[in-house]
Image 1 (tube, helix red, strand yellow):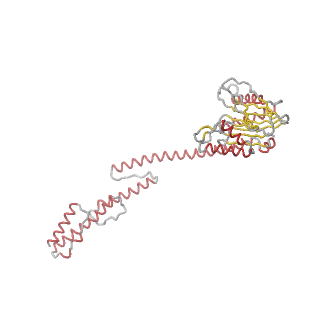
Image 2: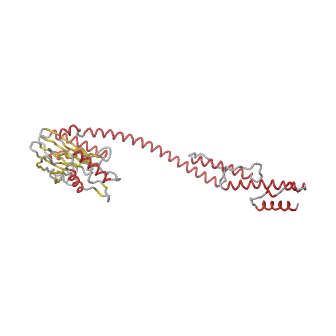
Length: 396
């Protein structure tokens, strides 16, 4: 009897001291003969069992194991059952909030609830802002697509103003046109015109690129065609002088206070096929002629087609003979100003001249391919900064 009393006393002491590791198997109730002591022993063991189950339940809660088994009919566990239920509900609510339900309201543990509810209000406000941003983004995306489609259609119209392949083939037996716009629309253009024993060719680089450049380019094409059709005697310098007057008048009509210096740089040649002469005039854009392995540069006048900060003087043309096998190159500045290479520098005119000399013996088709590959290799991952147009013509 003393042994059972000792074990019961030890169990009570463990309960009072809060120990959770109770070994109740050591208490042999059936060996107790005294009914009063036996009844007391049964009650103490049952109490200890409830305590032990509650202890394990609390430990699980402390580690966040909310799927733990909830002790039933347990006086010790009762306060923690409500905590367990609240934590499970709180976990569900937080998952709902994570899924975007900001209408949840937390009523759990006072200040803790206030903090979460403030967070929900803040998230609700941010969601409203994000919803508005999403609507704005969708609207902008729709408008962007509509504008892009309009620009693509404008590109079709712009291309229709350029000389067709069939027409160009009938003028030049050997040639290439390397036309690489930065955007859908281009500010560069080429223009050819054949009448009697004369072939006129021009390559122009209009102010800007994209839509503004395309508008100026279409003006340039239209005005060049009108000027040449009306001109009784074709002269390269007079064509540029008249083109400049027309562009200034169109972009800066009388009474306008605009100081925009829109216009274009251009190289224009007239081939006199009968007497094998070339007349060239240029507004900032030079003409390159490759003959017998040498590149000859015909320099342009240092002024544009358009309003110029200095006084506009007449363009000056230069005339020279050409021979079979000579190759003419006209171009915008997009190729030479492209950044790239090992040191992220411009391609520059020196490299461009050396490239043209190195490829001159190739067919015109191959030359265009090499120009394209060289440009892409040089550019690498850098963005293209300008429209690119290079026209090469091998003379017969």
